[in-house]
Image 1: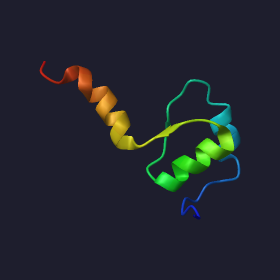
Image 2 (image 1 turned 120 degrees about the vertical axis):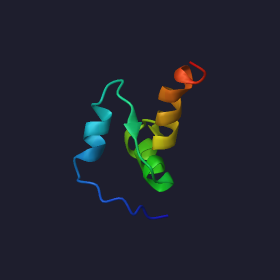
Image 3 (image 1 turned 180 degrees about the vertical axis):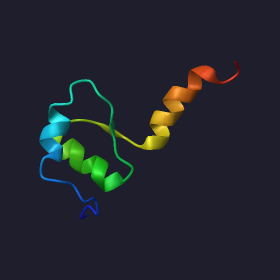
Image 4 (image 1 turned 180 degrees about the horizontal axis):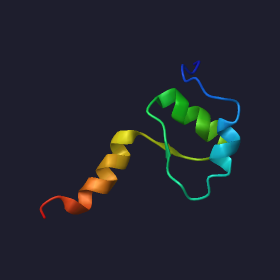
Length: 59
């Protein structure tokens, strides 16, 4: 599968150097390429939003 993401060639080195920062990518193929190329998990934006909204539900 070919990724439709348009990444600069510096993206994967930046992901590798990002430390404990959350890596966010909306496309499934983009997330797979980040895992394959940088050995880091990339999250869909919906998961990031859910993680931040969950503690506030019901307050």
